[in-house]
Image 1 (cartoon, rainbow, N blue to C red):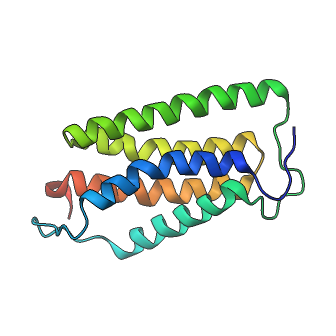
Image 2 (image 1 turned 90 degrees about the vertical axis):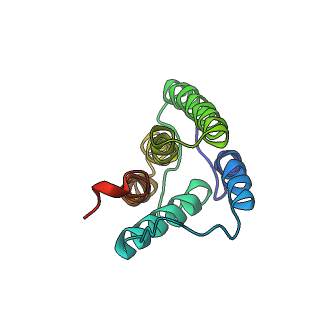
Length: 153
């Protein structure tokens, strides 16, 4: 199974992942941090490079000559994992909207990272997997620091 230069499945996955993020941003627009948290600039840059790189590569197979699943079985495994992770992501957002907590916030950082990385691995789109890993390092670190502020240096 192979794709052309644009992948609509990747766009659909991103839309599903972005909807709760947009709702959260809308609800918290203009909200200022009251605990004096500072974000580590290098981690923020790492997170943003990973985020936008992975998001773009979700549907544009840049520098990939053979963009597709290695077999029908690989596609089925990926599809089941992807649907399960997207459902878990939406459930975590529901829990977080109801009552924010550190464990749920960490899952909200882990799941999109895993989706990017696994999609890259299953599609043999190594650049996507690399950007997903970069995003995971930045996003998980920032989420950890924001949910555990007393443990920061």
